[in-house]
Amino acid sequence: MKSIWKVLIIISLTVNLFAILFISSEASKNEPANSDIEALRQEKSGKSIDNFAKNLGLTEMQKKEAAKIMEEGWGKVSEEKQKMRDRVYQIVLEMHKKIAKLLTPEQLEKFKTTSKKFEQIVKEKEKK
Image 1: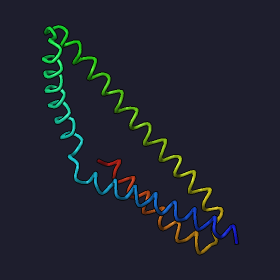
Image 2 (image 1 turned 90 degrees about the vertical axis):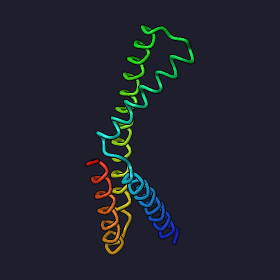
Image 3 (image 1 turned 45 degrees about the vertical axis):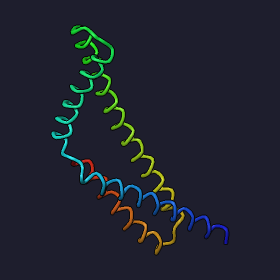
Image 4 (image 1 turned 180 degrees about the vertical axis):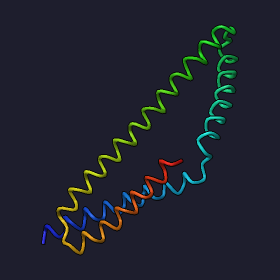
């Protein structure tokens, strides 16, 4: 009886995870394409550095150096965010493998269907 509850809890947690990922992927559909994002980032970056320089009273040379540092830093942040998404995806896949071992054949079929939906959502997000 306890193992049934454990399985139900695991399935419930997995379904919740899928729901969260699905909602976040649906929300991202309204985001601009990567080229648009890059253009917006550059525009914001320009305004940000202008405000930053104005507030601190930077010289032109300081402003140029600060902009260079900020651009490099935000590039690293973007790389780390992608690495994190990749690691999270691998953790979820490993979790699915472990859960699959607990399930009955009928439960496993349902779980596979849900997992396929999850994988499709992730692949769609990666295309953007």
